[in-house]
Length: 185
Image (cartoon, rainbow, N blue to C red; front, side, top):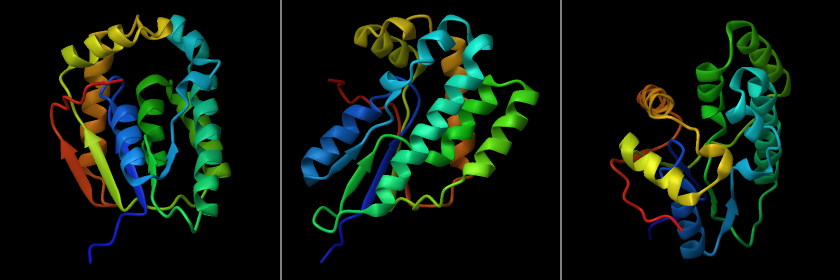
């Protein structure tokens, strides 16, 4: 009998439909769903408005939020063994590298190592990819005001960073879904 994965992570750039697929998987398995919670980050709109002024604070908010979510994952639920998340803690630094100055990145790394949590390795990571044009369309369609200023160059750099990250990723089985055409919503 095939054993169900206990921890599935869906990853990819903004607008690729991570949350949509994660919700569908959680619904299919009747499992816990752990969402990134970008809408809970009060600093994110400020970051998109003025990246240089709010980037470190927004990044640290996400780091602490994700660490708390990972801690709750470790506590487990013996009656609901499958968990699905739309983020991977290990990729958190990817955004930090793209947006922080060298000095901010050093500080971020110091904070990260000081609060490091022993995150469980997923049983499966599903990495979704889509062309920048599709990502931009989805971002526009979902209509989150502070995301409307995201430009193609940023998404291209983000996509390249994800490719590099997952090229070196060895912590779990990886399923790459190119040109993810999952309908959001």
